Image 1 (cartoon, rainbow, N blue to C red):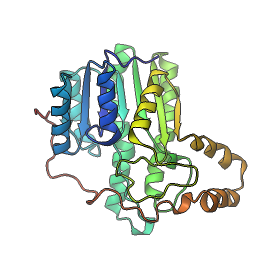
Image 2: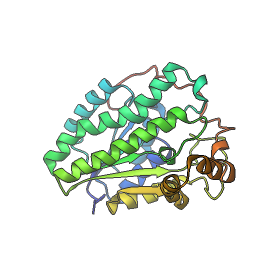
Image 3: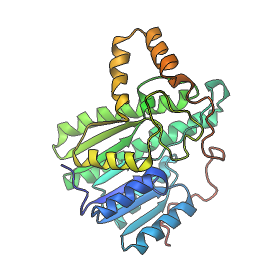
Length: 286
């Protein structure tokens, strides 16, 4: 079982949404220090100040997870200043929510860089240190979109399908190397954090509350669970895709459960998918 108490936890995208919630809960459950990576300097400063005011040890870093060189530079600083993470939660992610023909090449590249390459890069730079310390747990936040197609999610789904395949393959590799190296892959449906503002919940698939999914993820970590699918109905997707002909699957999922129209009124968080003006690898000091 993975222990959160007395551990060093690193969460990407950790200054808002379920990233912030998971960080707070890890500290409350006895984590010795929390390393937060985030692209938003204001949120990062506020969250670090909030947690430190409660007496916790927090190491905030302003990082563009889509910039691989920046990931490597920041990881070197983390290892020197905070030590080796015992638990790495690859939580950072973006969604554009357009039909593929409407995507710019920049949006496609940015989505893949953050959702896929960023998670891979962050994991790669810390794995040698985890191997040296003899234990470690990597948590990869994929999506229910990694289990089925969905209009207006083609690029996002592609990124999460990639995360799922990589994460499961990584798990097998690490299990061959040590019984103390673990990978948990999370495939949630829509979460009520603003990232998917405007979506319509499919039939029997409630939009997840951040508190609920954050608690479930941390319990899965403590239990060394391999796959966490939420809500429960997401567990049926691999079975249905395996036994139903594609057209029948489309009819059941698209017309009956209305998954294929769930993104029709998607608005998401305001603002473009862009690189922030302030690009830094320095620790923020509240």
